[in-house]
Length: 592
Image (cartoon, rainbow, N blue to C red; front, top):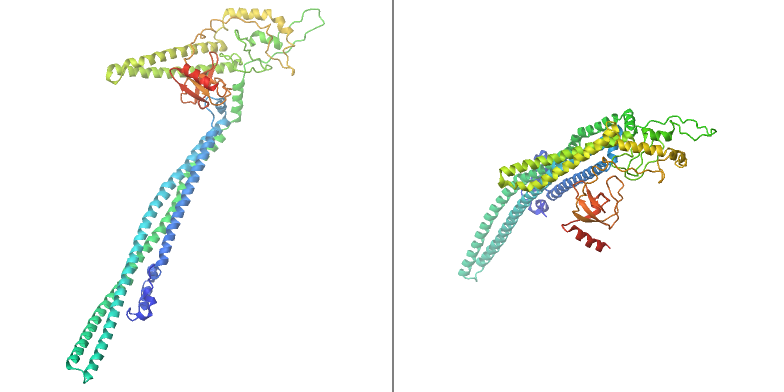
């Protein structure tokens, strides 16, 4: 601890210090405008105050850091919220987003994602412009403060050393003066004594002269030391300490300015993103204003329109006549046989009759014949578009490999041209299969749109024969097919259902070879495959893998020759091996 008030605590040294109290007072009076120069006796308090200033700066840095963490957390929560309500790809939920109201909601989700991005910008800017800058500044400030107070302590130690030298010189001068007085008194005593020899008197005289000379030397040294001390003291209070205090004051004022600028930056960072946030909100408002209830109502009609005509009036059947019951041409049951309903040959799926037929459960047939005409047309068109996209994708890959092969042929050092032949062959086969699939679905689409005859003439004749032979059966079982609530169902008895051999058109693509097995897998969790194309699995079940995950999160598996489908990749543990069947058997034994 320094003793800046050292000069003021020694009243007996006022004469030697040339009244330093008055000196300090005059310094303070001359330097009132210099502010901190008047605080030369408050060195310790200033040291504490500047340390407190650094603590305040570090506290503010911590505050801004916590603010950035809050902004990041808020942005992450907003992004997760937006992602949670985004429609899943290739799902029924995605189809629902064709309405203006749901599209507006989707736009709101996207804008909320951008809104979250602005909060991330706030966090990034505060981190770089405030936290990073202030952290570096605090380190520099600590070093500068340490240097200034080190200089202050060094100056104080120097003045204290000069004071000690002055005190030592003064004590030596005082001691020599006392010794000279005693030697003078002794000499005078010896000189007055008649019994003392002349030699002793001379010896005492020489000793007195020696002591007087030593006193004079001490006096000269003391005078020189005093002048030096006064000069050092003047420089200390007028030059060194004021300069040090001025630097400390400037350092503290820079700290205050810096924290003020940081607070302004804190507000500016928020203010800079306000226009972009405003645009996000404007886009949400614009999306909300785009909601069109008339358009959505029309889309409902387009989405669910079946294409069936409402049934005509039911004719009166006179049971008083001794004739066989006849069927009214405009009755609902007869409307099924006049072209409104076409039974699917070679299968158990029933067509859907509007509007009194219960919906079939389970997966529908490949040609969507279980759907109403309009819905079937849309499904077939959608399937054709998807297959055309797949064909284009395969053709792009084929073209790229063809170009690569040409490069290899021209530059053999770059690769073996024969290495791509196998893949090119696979692509050609895939393209051919997809084209056959397109032809098949286009045939069904043309049938729905009336461009082709319905199946074959043989099927027409068989269909007519079926209707003629079963007209009475339809009448007799009409009561059986009426549900308790008065609605009709399409279920017919096993005995009255006629099985017709499948036509060539049906069996055109039935000979496709199944995909080869590339490994096995074990179900980690139970999965209920309710969507089209998926398959249900039980926890611990062992199955074959026929197609790896292609990045969409689904793996294609097979239970047996007739059951295959997709399951989430995270629900199974996949084992890919050349000897897949042997691995499958061993794993099956382990699971048992």
